[in-house]
Amino acid sequence: MGESRGRVKVETSPKRIRAYVGGHLVADTRNPALVWEIPYYPTLYVPLADLHAKLEATGSTEHSPSRGEATLYDVVVDGTVVKTAASRYLASPIPELRDLVKLHFDAMDEWLEEDEPIYVHPRDPYKRVDILASSRHVVVEVDGVTVADSHQPRILFETGLPPRYYLPLPDVRMDLLRPSDLHTHCPYKGTASYWHLDTGEDVHENIVWIYRSPLPESQKVTGLACFYNEKVDITIDGEPVSRPRTPFS
Image 1 (spheres, rainbow, N blue to C red):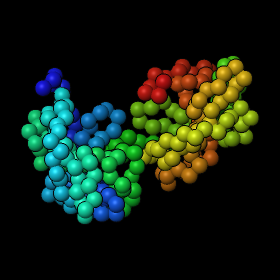
Image 2: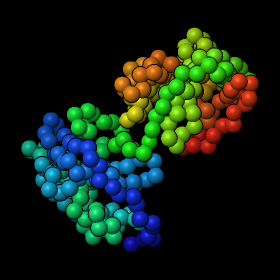
Image 3: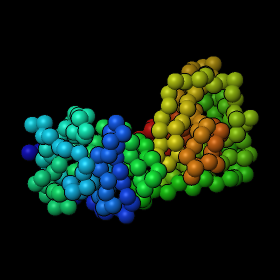
Image 4: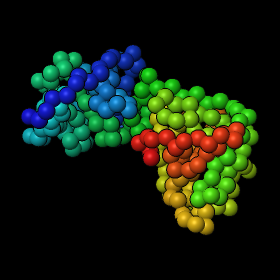
């Protein structure tokens, strides 16, 4: 059965949650559960009674040290079958999970919080994003080359992450940037596009990003460039800033 682990955090959310596949409603609940399976963000579970689809057991199981043995299911709705798209912890050591269904987030075509879509993963009610205009002097160097120098950053403060310095494009060495095909998605900010940085000494892949059309709550970073603090040398008002250790390091 594997080792046991400390109890995960479980709480009920007041938000209405809906999930769709192929335009068909899979679940509609006003009592979703947020389960912190990992520390960074919660996973959505829905009451079995609020499911609008059929679950068909796959015959497979999956073990979690904290949640117990999961039975895996295909999700069937209006003739559409989504393979291994749901899990149930029928005998979980966490009683709150036993009557809930985890619909695998990426297996659904669309998720709604109330009437607004959510992407990547559920929003964490304990995570906050503040974007503040600043007059701090921000200098970014890579390989000893100054790649950005700005007195008008927008500083994005996000719970659990280092401050991010979003800089106007005229303050960035755009001549050193090379377009990348990479796009990433954030449930709080939207879709980011990336550049590689060519300093002449080396090419640093996907080290700079921009939100061209961010979500409404992050509009203040629209069209600004940001560098990974973890991968560049940043000076703020003449003081060097240590590179932080994060999952992006």
